[in-house]
Image (cartoon, rainbow, N blue to C red; front, side, top):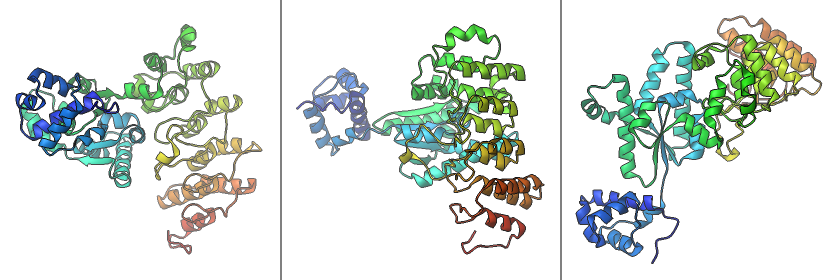
Amino acid sequence: MVLEENIDYESLGKWIRRVREKHKMTQEQAAKEFHVSRTVLSRYESGKVRPRWEDVERFAKKYHENPEEIRKKVSIVIPDTCALRKNKRLLHMLLEDYDKVVLPTTVMMELSRQKNRGVGRSNRRLAWQILADIDYYVTEYPERFKKVDSEIYREEVEQIYQDKDPKSINDYIIIALAKRLAKKTIGDVVVITDDIDLTTHYKEAIKIDDYVARRTKTIDYEKVLEFDKVYKNLSLFQKNIQTLDINAYLPDGMTLLISCIRCRTKEKTEQLGWRPSEKEKYEKLQFLMEYGADIDKNDNARYCLPPLAHCVQIDDWRAFQILLEAGCDYNKASRDERMASYMKVGKLNEGNTPLMIACWSGRRKYVEKLCSYSDISLNQQDSNGYTALIKCAVARYNRKKARKSYGVNESLFRYLQKRGADPLIRDRNNHTAQDWWKRADNPEYKEKEQW
């Protein structure tokens, strides 16, 4: 009987090695069971040579093992802390690409420290968001997302790598976990990281830049990354840019266009290592649009916002006007355009339009500009059921509760009502904009449904 083609050499070799080690056999002893030399048995285990299926079944039967396990090849991925921080939607992507996601306690501890003692509010908030996402996935997909105790390897790793920088010890702990899992698994155990040292010491580690490049299936991805950092002498790149996938996603989930829009933010300047001037920013923005950048393509980061929404979010009025003049879709909502709908998770806050974000942020001139268009979607709802009007009311409630000024939220609420916004549309919890308004004025206010 010939071994079926849907079982690959590598999976079979891993299974033979796992059975041999489980029963404490040497390669010489296992080789006798297959009636081959130790060298041939070694080639079986490495996947370089395929044994006869009859011999595999006989070997399995003698040691009471099930050869059908070979068909259960599972791909496992371990995300490193730095990779999770670089792309805020990495967990979403891993859900689509791998069978199981393993979250080491070492990574969880690093994120917890960053949440509580990290430098800068934005860094602490990012760590908090990642931890919240992890908790959600572990609860929602218990068979696919697992928290695994990796600290059991710390003492062993610290003894082996006494001369190493303490900061790199965590990398070696993750490697130790990956290697142990690989011995028990018929399939691949991959680590996604942004640390070049980790990829050096573990052959199955993948840099997040390379992982994103594989997902985008983009040729010359390195040139895309290089061009993301260019803001001077753009004319020198006119020939090259025509051969690039100008709409590819970058490792942080942004497109080149959105990256350009955000290039003067603190987060982006830290990535670049410098801050482009406003003149350089807008010249590159026009350059990208001239050569085919999609002015409506959403990012693939945490909130999956369209370019126009990014302009509102960072208060870039000039870029906002440039996109509108270029004919962008001002009703385009946030949405993960890469993930199949059946893979969506309930907590993904999709459906946010530029108008909603402007209302939430209290940016009146953006609201007025958007409302000047006759076909603006005033009553569009996001995945929580919020409309732009409800956003105004909720923002007013939050600011009033925090004892902050909320006058702009009240003026926007009244402005939208005059424009025709419906105050009776209900969100997913059955609350209207009017309910939120009353709740802000009276914390004890309750509708029929409990808040």
